[in-house]
Image (tube, rainbow, N blue to C red; front, top):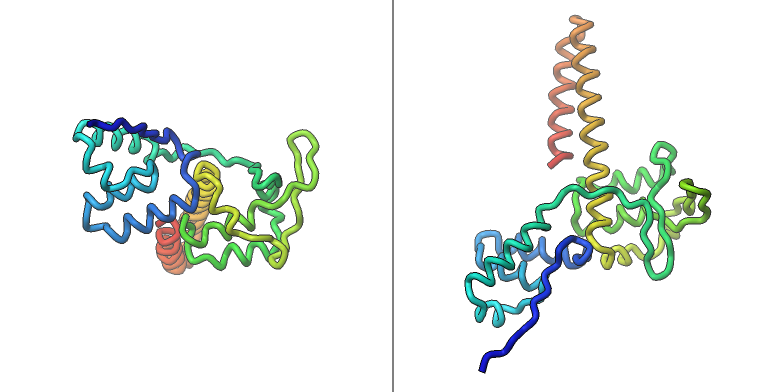
Length: 215
């Protein structure tokens, strides 16, 4: 006797929490040399299909599921979302990065790389803080205090569309800053031949650092 099951396939990252995303990354890395195992863990973590169920599905169904998943897993066009509500509390993204508290800057800089990994929840906990006042499109958030930031684990249950919005926002800033900085250094090298060698060394060192950051 055949048994029918309903398979619900997510269509975007709003159905994937940071906790689930990190688990997926962990499993993919653990089984990086086993493509079949990677596919099985992907289906289990995102859709909830156990290996026992997967083994009973026909190849056409498996292929369709994989295609539907890949349609949104490779998405990168995420916009920064300024507000997110967690457990009834409205959090707002740092409204003025140029005036961000020095303590917040130091805590952000403590991360070795800009990456969505196990430390990413700390980044979100620094950049998003409870909204204290709003006026039209303007808003203010609580001052940064590393000792009173609250439990950073609350970000593990926030969906990846928020996390990716913040992540790609900083990626875009970094790329623009990189382009403008290198352009300025190159122009300086052309104007002053006496410091050309020194500038060349700076460009090489900057390029190495930038490549590490972008990776």
